[in-house]
Amino acid sequence: MSFWTRLLNLTKPTPATGKPPLSVKERFTALKNIPAFLQLIWETNRAMALGSILVRIVRAAIPLAMLQVARLIIDEVIFLTQHTGQYSHSHLFNLVLIEFGLAIFSDILNRGAALLDSLLGDLLANSTSVKLMEHAATLDLDQFEDANFYDKLERARRQTLSRTVLMSQVLGQMQDAITMAFLAVGLLTFNPWLIVLLIIAVIPAFLGESHFNERSYSLVHGWTPERRELDYLRLTGASDETAKEIKIFGLSGFLIDRFRELSDRFYTDNRKLAIKRASWGSLFAALGSAGYYGAYLFIIIRTVNGHISIGDLTFYAGSFARMRGLLESILNRFSSIAEGALYLQDFFDFFAIKPNILPKPNARPFPNPIREGFRFDNVGFKYSNSDKWAIRNLNFTLKAGEKLALVGENGAGKTTLVKLLARLYDPTEGRILLDGYDLHEYNPVDLRRNIGVIFQDFVKFQMTAAHNIAVGRIEEKDNQPRIQTSAAQSLADTVINKLPDGYNQMIGRRFAKGVDLSGGEWQKIALGRAYMRDAQLLILDEPTAALDARAEHEVFQRFAELTHGKTAVLISHRFSTVRMADRILVIERGQLLEIGSHQELLALNGRYAELFNLQAKGYQ
Ligand SMILES: Nc1ncnc2c1ncn2[C@@H]1O[C@H](COP(=O)(O)OP(=O)(O)OP(=O)(O)O)[C@@H](O)[C@H]1O
Image 1: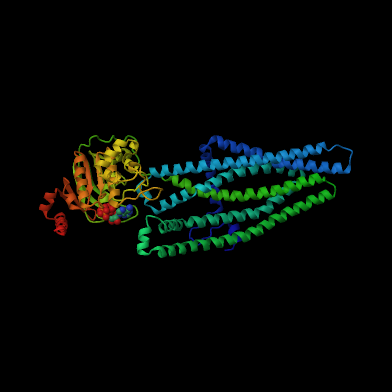
Image 2 (image 1 turned 135 degrees about the horizontal axis):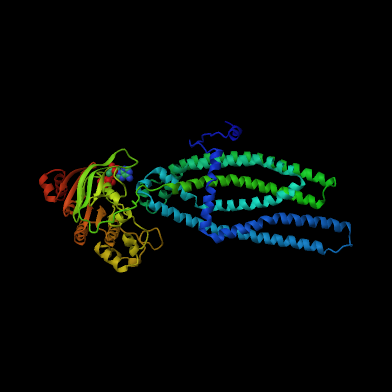
């Protein structure tokens, strides 16, 4: 299909990416996002937004004023040259002075508008980034695990800069539209057909721009997953976290090849589009120029025939040239505003994603203390991106005050069970009851406040040692005694006391003066977070795997003492630790296989006894 057929029929071609680009109608509908966007700017800083609008309104009137003064100057010059020595030149000098004043004033206003735009743009970028983080924090974990969601998040995040540009464009558009209206009044009195000619001459350029903007949006949009991969490869190929394995396994060539393959493909698609855009663009610009020179010729002929003065000639030709430039930039900007509005759609789409796990209006207060415990009632769970049951037919009670250990092979479903307890996900079937009421009855924030979980893949925050512990209860980040007590309880104090800056030491290597820790040292710090919390249920999901045997034993011994009377769940592959629990739940392929105390399970002589003996043999 040719460019023209596509342009005139407004049909939807299929680009290389396989995603049909949006039709003109869809593009225009995207403009509905502009009022919401203006509202966003307005809320960012009302005074600056108002200032910017006022400056632009005043600035919009200047071109017409300058053209008028120029017209008077030329007519005055001609008059004076025809009457040499008969009249004073003071009127002429005054006119020149006025034009000079207008030029200076216009420059000041331009700079003022640019300054306000850049400050307002920065504030807008900051406030939208904050809104993005705030919204992301309300969303469910499974939404983060969905690739489509990630693409949306990525597109919303990438546009921080383009939103600032869009803001200047929308404001600039307003200014130019007002200037044009002023100029149009002048030209209308001269010859309204000139304006018609002008519009006809620039329309092809406008349609061409809109078409290519839409194609380029589709290209970029369709490439989102690949661009995400490119970012990932760029980061993985050159980062302190990956450098070790990349060297050992000699992976740089592999990563670079993949990067090259993807980036070359994107470049090729983009180049094709850029070349087409440049070629058609030149043709359309020539059409615009032809329109302008036609009108210019008409004005010249009217002057030569004595219908208008030389001053009028400069005024009309100047107004016309100015209007052409303005109309072109208004129309072109219009299509890039429409394109920006499409990107804005992604931004608003991201905010339209709502979490599924929400508090009920009359949520129950979290029981304090927990009386009965958590009952799993035929619980089954499938991850949204998988058809496989991660957990199925789970029936048991985690009694109040008991220490329960979860044992099972890799992928058995232990972490999934813990995530369900903390309501990071909701069961696909069955329910979890806390003191007889479904977890849905409680406020999820309240629930999580009462549960402390340290995961095996806990986050190594690139912050100070004190803050790394305080994240367990961030409201207490300035409570140094509490942080130190928690550190002592998790054995992290031995690690921190050796750091050059103690609790104020930056840990992790990302920032200046950061010190990295060993795996076991990081774990001791992360465990400190559990003690920061006033949680009624504490869950340790293998956060001790990197500890040496003596340290792990000591950590769990302390954990048992310090959480005496509290409900706790421990996940560990070490049976010397597991046996300390009151009861042990053996989970296999998502199903409960055995449950009972260490002694009971040994007596049962089932899977637990088999695994325990296997490990014990290893130590003999
Ligand atoms: N986010 C996820 N999306 C899809 N499937 C997942 C996800 N997380 C875990 N799974 C799958 O669910 C099953 C249970 O995983 P889970 O992490 O609960 O196992 P685990 O018993 O904690 O294993 P390990 O001892 O290795 O930590 C596995 O088959 C795993 O592949």
